[in-house]
Image (cartoon, rainbow, N blue to C red; front, side):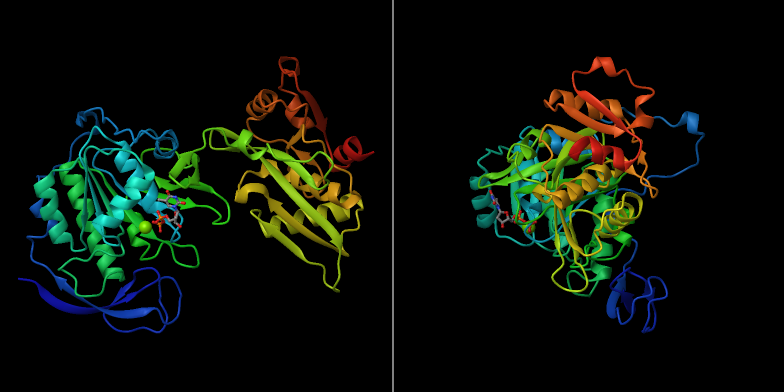
Length: 455
Ligand code: TYD
Ligand code: MG
């Protein structure tokens, strides 16, 4: 029989203690400990119920055999790309994102699209009627999709025994509870225990489980970090609510790269895949406006051309304002310092606002030159032609530094019809420039780019 015991859990990281603590020794946060009652259950728990007690014995690695795992395609190229080519049988995936970003829509849409497998969509947040309304809105048939509104794991496993699905979706992990733990839904011990139960189920039966998880205000997945260790992949769905774009990223993926992203657009009838984001993002622009520059960035293996917009104006107050949207604020300060110190541009008395069009954000350092040139363009009020793009990093002494896979960026710029691309002169050495129609401008320091553009 189960024995009830009281523990204190840090709600931030899941640290467990037998007494209350003011400060968590693990994550250092104050006042995060909450008392939770945990029943230490007898061995007949989820693990054994689903037959995962198969004997284990050490083997030589050469003797370990496996059948070629056939991934389950999601019938959505963007989702498959992020997963690394489909859902791996027996895997446990976590999809995180802010409320209202479209997690339920994405997974319901996926469930409806995988018509050749039996699916079970368990919702702890919506009734079956509400799910149906959403499905009607999306407008895909979904011949083999079962839905149920349920929050208790034991009953979910009963439904699974009745339906025998090939894929299980839980919306969301914060709403499900297990009878083995006495604390409320969404608490650390509940989330940990429920996640573990689904993990045992997935490993024992080979049925992949997709969990939806909420994100707290500070941008981390609600619930303990321990959940991220249990699952095989952590995907994050993000985007600016004011724009239609949604980006799916893998923060962790045991079966694929974490560099790939998937791009979607939220429409009135569900999410639409955006296979070619560059063409989409660059279409609307007036040639006569200063302060805009296009960066040739790479997200994973895919080139993505994004527009950087800057506004430089005289500071009204004593302290000039700097504001960056979709770009690292400290990096902006650094670039401004470079422009000020190395190139002699007096930006100290100016307000600088920076915006990455479309609510996108990128970590590719190749965006630096476009950022610097957009600021300079706004400062001198001379527009940069929309048929020019940039791909280079900036060093602290104002040198234009080479970036990775420059051929791929140039080829894509060529394909998209750009006329000139600015790159580092250190990138040109290994390059066969005659292969491209596009005019390649190689620069060594930021001043050369400035002179080429505005002189
Ligand atoms: P939802 O999937 O419920 O978000 P989450 O599960 O992450 O909380 O999506 C919520 C938003 O998506 C909601 O504000 C309405 C919008 N939406 C559309 O614009 N079109 C649609 O077809 C659907 C289903 C939702
Ligand atoms: Mg939802």
